[in-house]
Length: 227
Image 1 (cartoon, rainbow, N blue to C red):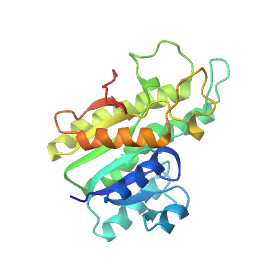
Image 2: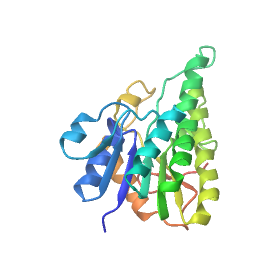
Image 3: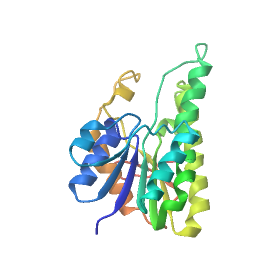
Image 4: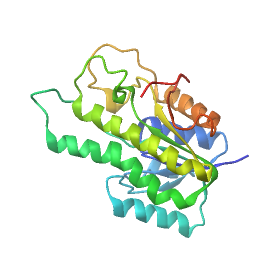
């Protein structure tokens, strides 16, 4: 059965691949892009342009446009995020605030604005990162990114509690180490996967999400992660 799905942050990377894969399997996909999403629109995919999750006005405009078209959503993938690395003694607090605004407040702002468009039984997936896991932090560093993703995890868990009475399931998602612009300066040696591989895993996680597994933190390979 065709689902209506909104993907937020769809300009490139993992979200762009999610849009492509959902469209290819026949879902009715809406790509919310920071820019114009011209390549997606050229292929007949519905694009909502100039969606900035750091702007309350922007996400309210998105919600109003969707509501005006009588759009009801079966799922939201909130992928939009940024990462600028730092270390103790060299923290740019303006950058810190910007990351927090996009990575933590962004998904809350967006889901709150779109809440009324979610169908009963809808699913919400929010991309986080295991570097935001308190239990998994064994190395320190990356202060702004870690803290913003830890806060995002709390956003997801709170949304689970508040939306589950409406039959809406929420899952925090870790895509894995993905070769994108976001991770090009990530420290250390890692075995990277492609955006297409990460997208397939995240789609599978959301496909399998149920009210019983809502409120958890899941890797794209299917394993559940500690908070």
